[in-house]
Amino acid sequence: MNAPKKTTPAVKTAKELRRQSAAAPSPFPPIADYAFLSNCHTGALVAPDGAIDWLCVPRFDAPSVFGSLLDREAGSFRFGPFGINHPTTRIYDPGTNVLATT
Image (tube, rainbow, N blue to C red; front, side, top):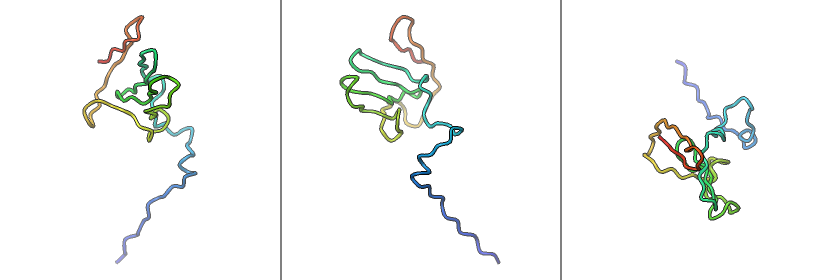
């Protein structure tokens, strides 16, 4: 009788994790998919799923509070039902900075 083979999980080194193939898909949405919200003092970038992935408070030149746009571990904020993402459409009202989401 043959004994089952033991396999060890593949462990990647830090160098391997930093290296990403140009052909590999990015874990980040394209920048064109983000919406921009602003009050003229600061601004936020809102991801397609409604999460705020970039926000500097209280001014544009302040350190970011949410920085998930650059690093998935840097935090974001999403107000919505847990684990449920619905398809949405977004458009700016013509001539305004008002974002209409349906």
